[in-house]
Image (cartoon, rainbow, N blue to C red; front, side, top):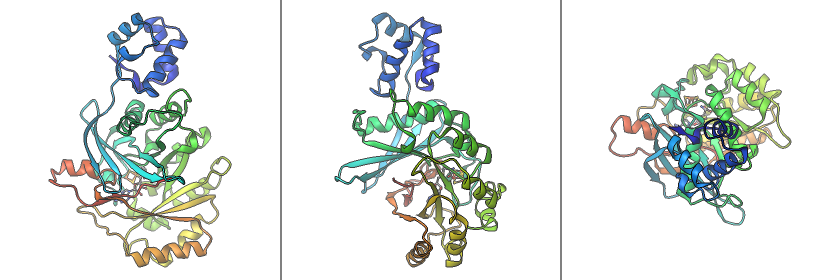
Length: 366
Ligand code: SAH
Ligand code: SF4
């Protein structure tokens, strides 16, 4: 059985032509049912002929990831633990924000791999190790689950506004499926997310970065977390194999759209990277890049060697950067009362922890 969620529009068109002898427009109709009307059953596809629907049901299916559990924070942040076809577990988080008119909008944090090979020392996913890449269908299945959960059925007025690839995994190490996912997301007759509503976050993978830059399918966020090579080697040993100065040089010539800026993520780890000297180094490092800086408050995980920074240190760090004319956003923690930092829910499952530890989601909201 072919899961149609895992086909791009050209692939679906070619498959329906070859397998069912259906014309191009028929595939476009089915595509719209899958992605805009969120159909999971061919029977409901009312503008598709009965014969075609029967033949589709014989050879294909529309399967989304299954919700194993959800955790909802008092602030509305909602975390999903999702089960994939082969039994793998991944996480996705929905983060609310209110627009200028006070209407609630959502940003979804998506996973791109089951686990992660990069082993960053502060990250629950990194400590879990790498299991496998996710397929395009699994990445986008998270969006279907969330839209269904939000009852987000009007494509002209979407409640789910932004998608950030900041969940489990390193998206640029799963480039093939990431590109298929981004291309499908961009499709106007599908989920219709323009590149400015999509952000891919990376710890800095040289080859992937140049591919992403060339095709401009999403905005870029880079996880820095350290202002110098030595410290980066300590807290992100694998990512730091690509030296920080080379990463920054590459980012200076990274192709950006008008008004687009690179987002730098900087996780504040108490007494590790949060001194004024670190802030000075950081300002120097990113000062010449067309970017903005997200300071993220660290959410301590069980067994982690790190702690969150003191509020005073955080504010002093932020203030110093402003004084150096760096655009800084201090990311308020969301989901404090649930364990909303990616990797943590699954880690807890694994360790059979009875209750969720206090974690918050610090993924950024546009
Ligand atoms: N692999 C990519 C994308 C996934 S990780 C990357 O590294 O950019 C995305 C973000 O999760 C990281 O930038 C980091 O800021 C955040 N993160 C990981 N562990 C965290 C924790 N314990 N508390 C707060 N944020 C965390
Ligand atoms: Fe992987 Fe990103 Fe976690 Fe590092 S921070 S281990 S790159 S998911």
